Length: 225
Image (cartoon, rainbow, N blue to C red; front, side, top):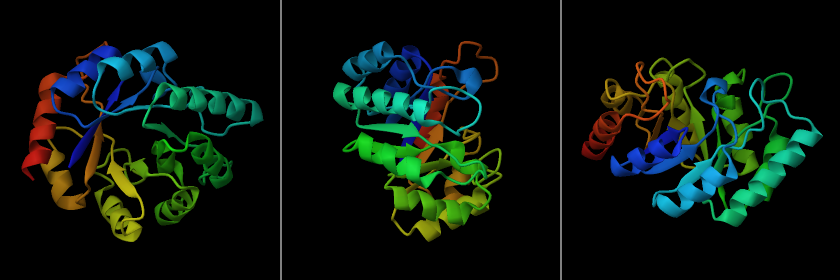
């Protein structure tokens, strides 16, 4: 099983690799829930971190409804990530009714190829999880980061289990949202996913830097299950 760490700085990337994480979702602006990181940070991480780096592609905070100008910006960001050698990206977009905007997401997947594309937690705003799953599959995304339409993965465990069953290997379901060392064993037991996502941030951490011990416990638990 694999642990993906959401990192907001190079320090978190270094800690994540050292502590045994398998992949990094690299973001800027944690107060907005993550936006596109600087290309300087992406390039530096790619040259100094050996585990895969998936930059977030999100031009701003707030909602995930993008106009043509924002899509053009995202395309440029994606092409730079591809040129730099990123193995994947994380992104997502929705329509006014909160459903996945499949047409835009298909274009993202085309621009990103051969990079993998993770549909991020925009998924959790969809009105119907199982329909949203089918929508994302049609776009060609490699995985979905989701808490089962709930605030945390633990609260959405039943839906997450349903998503994994319905996906039938067509796409990876990666639980995220409140994934911590204190509940990872329960999540593994109740959900049975092969990948999990965590920021590994502690409440007392004001620099949004991942906690090394937290990651070590998470990865050890995943390896031993």
